[in-house]
Amino acid sequence: MTRRKKKLKPYHGIILLILAAVDIFFAGDYLVRQFGYYGTLFAELILLFLSVGVVFVFGGDLKKVFPIRRPKAHQVFGTLVLWFGTLLTTMIVTMVIMIFFPKEMTEVSEGISSSIMHIPFLAAFVVVAVSPAICEEAVFRGVFFNSLFKPERSKWFTILVTAAVFGAFHGSIWRFFPTFFLGIAMGYVLMETGNMFYNVLLHGVNNFFSLFAAWMLKFMTGAEGTYGADDVGRLMEQSDALLQMPVYLLGQYLTFYGGSGLVLIYLGDYLIHKGQPGYDKGLFPKEKRRTLFVLVTVSVACAVIGIVLMAAGIATKGRSGL
Image 1 (spheres, rainbow, N blue to C red):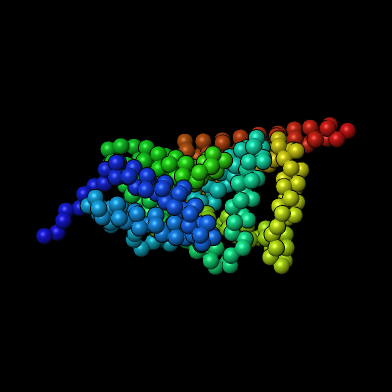
Image 2: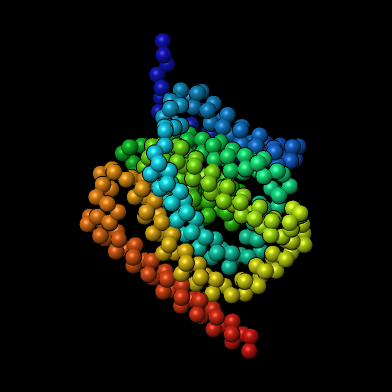
């Protein structure tokens, strides 16, 4: 007799979060000390094992908790566009935090970059991009997301709560807001497509971007692959020099990333829903005039405010140099 599949309850998701916290903050540390950065891979695989195990123990439906279907080209492209737009807007938030807490943010970036510089790129790709995209998504946008979701409840409750927990699990207040916004994008993609392939893709691409940036930094600081304290010191000095013009930097980010990020998010959202009701009348239908008006207004406002801040930053720097 086939066992009837059950809908996961919120406490099922909380149980998994407790187990995941033990793995990430305790077992993971031990594994890293024993096996180096490869211990992170073992910890990630444990997350996947725990996710599947919780669904099985509590009688959940694996196909509903981890919905994977063949991807569609326009939704894949839409996911990538949405990710890039989210990245640009998140960079503004990161810059604001960087301006007020430069030392803390530099230390976080330094720690992430230096920890992956001493392993082969292919291994780093698996550890940094592939395994978290699969294993962490199984926990957060898989089991926990499914345990919270109810059709009669606003979809944004599930998306936002999951994103907040996802951000908190990164263990740093300085990384919370960037990961929170990326978590919103991943939850939204899953909610709108019903296919985990896309949020896994978004997660993986985002992590690969960070990995690629770190390796490009390694390439620029030493052709022989060296990345030591002297390199970090030079980079911190460069960061300090830039951060002496915080108003200018914030203006620059608002000008070039604010409006662009919002436009890309709008375009990515359209591509994800292309052909569906409400999205079947082209990119700029009459029904969305209000949305377009808000989009254009905010984009122009970002550009204007950004230019003003850049001018003010240059003027302030000029006066201080006299």
